[in-house]
Length: 559
Image (cartoon, rainbow, N blue to C red; front, top):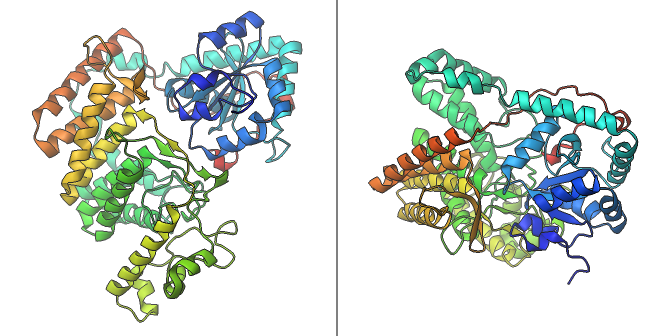
């Protein structure tokens, strides 16, 4: 048993439990911590992350497990840990504040508040010593503690300006929405707006490696699906080509687990070679949707094969005994990022023998490694082109590669596995249910439809709030559901129910979708709901802390 046990030990969140034995006196978000901050007149540190976050783990090892650093935190601050996936509402508020203060964002998210909960300073990852053009974590702690004692008025003024900005920004569109009358959709969204949206997306397109924008690159599934649907509606070959190029390059890249299936959250480079290896349920659900669209338009087997491979990964590694879906797999194992997924050339040669030379050429496995002295499996040349440099037919090469992958996967399965975030999130599960329906609709594989029905049955039962209203909870773990569901939860569940009705013909699903839509209208009438958006940075009053430590952009890896 570790020497330290803090208040997080009683939580269910895997992310909070990761910090339960830090020497930091962590609290979960709640009245106990907030009232103590007022009673002792101390600033609050809100530190937000998630279980699969690589740089969250790095900061924990470097700072939160350090006795001397923890002593500073415990003396001068009330320290609160939040799982962003459990509490997206709080995450949105404080991420919004950070983006307004600095124009940056990402996780780990560390925001400092006055005892009245108003934010006045924040950042993402801070190193243990000065690096990345930013101060060390201990320097930040000491400067803020000093400012709170010596420059309290400046901090309160900055916090006041920040709070006013956030309140005004979050009112955007609320009054206007009250005056909007119901009009036909065609009048709200015109053909010209469709063209303008496609043009804007294409302006950001990477024509060589696919995707949109520069590194770090996220899958951009909404943009991909929009371009595919735009081509279907208007016959734009360039839009379709960019969407398919994006999918093709991701499927060929290290972003995609070439052995076990499934996609990592994002790539650190433009070529999709090096991900941060965490696999999130929602990314894989959205990518299955996109590949199903691509297969329907092109009938190319690569998309159907990737759907099948990814669904096998979901069934094998992300599905609970109850049939619902886990949240994420960690980036790290044995404290090393990507260790579970990467290979030395010697390892592969010992496992594959005579087949190793061809396999290593196809997947770019090198003696010195293709990434940080090890190898990520990725495809640099399509199979149809690579086979020309061999004496094999495409069919023979496919069989050989499949056999080799199976051998390596068998060995990999004996390794120490990345951590599993096994909480059940309502909205993410609904996204996966929709993906199961899409996968079934393009493949005819009945087990996918069964997965969708089984998961939905569990969600509507186990995450049901008491009282008979039909309201749902946001998250579930260890037999208990908690936190009322959010707007996106209801939206995704309604969408999934509609998809289930379409693939099963069961009117129960469409009736439940209608009931949830009516319920949400009732809930929103009783309680104001604001959508937090990314805005341009504002310039609040400069505090002592900001003058001393001007915040540099986060390392890309904290995104």
